Length: 220
Length: 226
Image 1 (tube, chains in turn brown, red):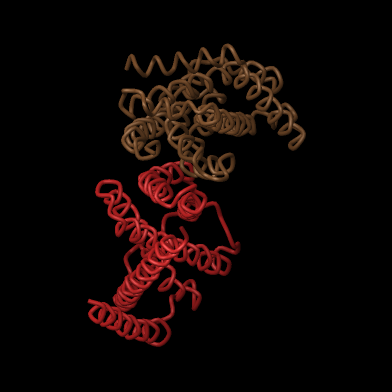
Image 2 (cartoon, helix red, strand yellow):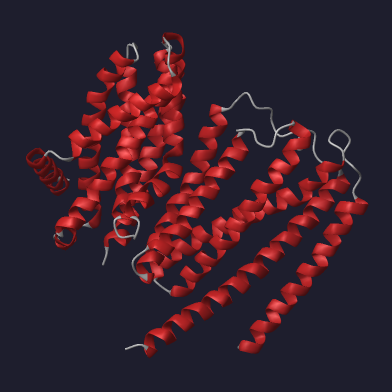
């Protein structure tokens, strides 16, 4: 666990010094929101019904962009081989990279949410939404880290990741959109519980499965 | 060894042929026309067995992928890969016969109903499976990557299905299984299921031997060029 935190620290430090991932993903996410606004010409009434979808499409697209960089950076710097050669288990590497992707995605989401709230005139600062976002992002990061490591070794890495990632995380996207809809409509925790359970189950299953198969993806 | 194998696929071919003829007879002559949906309902005897074979094929991909990662014997990879290709063909057939049946009964080609949507996602997952393999930098890496997708994808399918069913509760349940199937229809369905399952085994075997030949040729080519 400590070793995984070291990998997380390494990624955080290199991001803090280079400042390339979070700002670019943020701008991208903002652009997605703006494009959605052009596409739908949202008035106040319609905004409420379409907002959950827009929010999660934005998070998904921004997430996949960030995940692409997670291993592409390592590969470009040649530090992936170094990481694999470290005297740690492959599931520790997986956990570390998963945590760092999770952290970057959560930072982006935490900045995007208030902007989204202002632009769409919606009140989104509720504990329900925070729980949904964290659970769903864990799901994204668990599958995304595995596929990011895989896609980086293919010919068309930027395209390969979304092609693998979107169908597999479709349950998380559906459940997150439905839960956000209910939360924005003022639903109680009991209303949300079945969707949160699905996302939670997805998280647990894919954290276990991905850490088990991760060694087959990074071995040379 | 070689002679025995040819014999086995000959038997499968014969069996598949006989079952298909029997299935055609049952579907078009023996079984009565369904009361509410009319003649178009006969596509059911094609649609359901094809869907079953698609699922069976992806189950074989899943098992083959696990065995390949565990044992690293290329025969398991060849099995998984061949089954995935056959599975994609059959899933495509499901996605074609589904709308053909939906148009006269529901009035539209496509509805975002639970089963249709799940099948579409399933199809996309296994397209990714085939793409990963062909875009991998090396052959052995492609096999490993595909196996990972074969495992993760199959585990994902029930979760996808569950989520989509939950999100579309307004859809009516399956009409066909309400109150059970008439005996003659059940018989026809079972024969069709058998016919398509045998066809799957036959196609899988053909694809495996083709794949083995491909691997052999690749090896020979590599040996030739220094």
